[in-house]
Image (cartoon, rainbow, N blue to C red; front, side):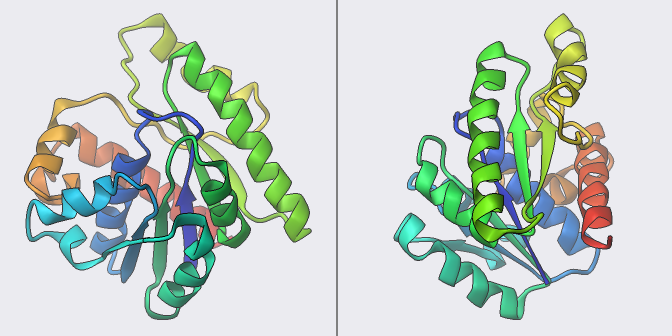
Length: 214
């Protein structure tokens, strides 16, 4: 049983995409999965409704955000091996409540300098939650996201993240096939299992699973 939250102060860095596709990868590993969509836009709920894949059976809407998130996560944890929480941008209290209950906090970051500025704010929030818990949890990991390796910013993103003092997990590229999968209601593991995008999400899931086993 583990709770993994995906958070960030800025929108557009791939939080929902990462949460949804990690659900697909853990399901492919034979794990039971619950996904809590705490973003008021409920992008994951909309994604799940597009088809009849893994997400259709595991995504739950968090109606009251920060007020009920912790309790809903604990309930989900009783029935699922992996609970994934997708948190909204710009709503610090919801992300903070997720950090108070999560075992791992994934902080995606795109190659833009603006993404890096926002990441520092998110990191500060998660460290505050660890101090309140008096624990090493949540374990905090950065995830390079929407990376275009043909650009200087993309190639330098991992190094920039490492300089911020936290471990960096395998990155996710900017790929059209990921958006295509969303339009069908499927995860990349279901939609394009032979794609480079699937390999990236599979590697990310394996890295997260390795942390959970420590």
